[in-house]
Length: 445
Image 1 (cartoon, rainbow, N blue to C red):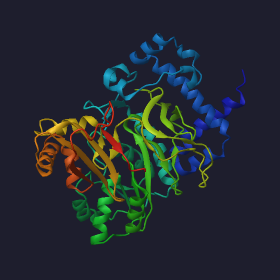
Image 2 (tube, one colour; image 1 turned 90 degrees about the vertical axis):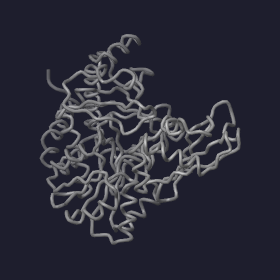
Image 3 (spheres, helix red, strand yellow; image 1 turned 30 degrees about the vertical axis):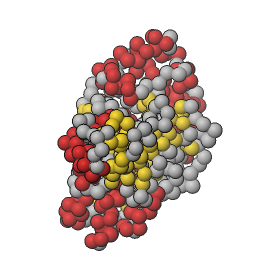
């Protein structure tokens, strides 16, 4: 049987990905742009069907598909799965054994969740290599080249970002040094010895690092990259002004092994990693904004089917002015749950429950409002005092528990990556209805 035109295009796309993209990432990305849309759509469709069949071997999906009457062989597109989704709670409740179908070489954890139990995800060296290749193509298109010297300040504790960056830079062939997430002032003192031209880090860390540079002198760099949390545009402009260089943002999750999308020079949304993921939005509103959902297309160890990312965005299919073939995700508008990504870290109500545990004089009703002063996130923890204690006494107890129970969050506070204030409210002032919203993010208002 002669292959159809669609089959030929899919094979051509895979050949570009497997050979040209690996040898010349930027050239391979441009060649994808020259292919008709049907080639990428066909490649995604073929990989989606393969993912469903492979995932069905995992205990979690096998049992779920059987319970819902889903025949994996008959699934051709996401809508064939009805209202079935995978959630972060599924990963926590069932553990990696329920999702694993291939040999794992390494594991990573989420940097923070709405639960004290982390989500763990398994990967192979081959999967790391594939994601690094895709990231290398995006970075090359932004101008990062073999002549650059990269300084990374990503936190290496169980987090995927350093591993993704290492994998990408091996294809670019540039110098790379890892500072880790040390105090920005210490990094400023030590970094010049390596003559960095490109700096990677978390947004709040980069803001603090840049403010130190504004006081003590910035050296010539070509660009900065940030990932791990949201960043106000005013803060981006501040960083860019200090360094006289662009700051690009990456969007990813541990479950996706980092990069789901990355900005181009237009800084107008994240170009989607369509080679490795199939994207949807759940229950979109009239503007198209809904919870992001993705299916992994090239994962063999722990494939994820229709994974709910928890972030609210929209799919942007209109062409970008940069001309890149990959479509985009709009900037993240909000979280679908009460977890908030901010300068403190990825925090949920359980964090403050633990901070307030055994704080004498603090009532059971409390609320955190997350705002931004244009540079840093500002968290105000409102309490109702039951024993007439002063605000300063309660704040001292809160900060003490923060340091003892969440040293990473306390370290971010010590480094000036965010502010945390305690305020007192009259009894009954916080609870306006039957339910009290514990965390309120007003940064986008």
